[in-house]
Amino acid sequence: MVWFTVQLDDKPGALARMAAALADKSINITAIVGIAEDTDGALMLATSDPAGTRSAFKAMSLAFEEHDPDAGMTLDDMSRATGLADRGMGAG
Image (cartoon, rainbow, N blue to C red):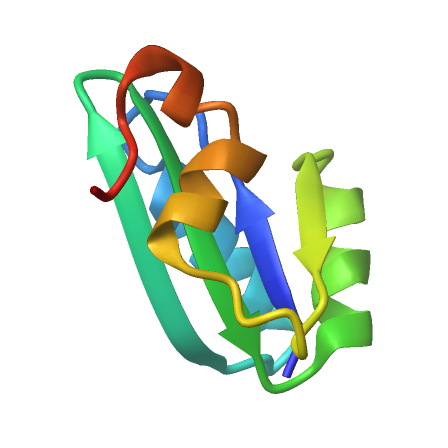
């Protein structure tokens, strides 16, 4: 499983647009976790088709990071990877 971390715009429908871009390619979101505070946040997800997910995100100009599935990423790791820990938004 490949994990993707994205930071969505703080606008209504941003999450829906991302999900629709995946659905248009028949890609299922198989795992998802989010962290947010006020308007800052990040979403981490895994899908049924990593290559298709990359393609969908690139087509919609959505910046993303990929994470090694064997690295055992935690919520604290996620907050550090997205820069949220620098603003005091870690999991612990």
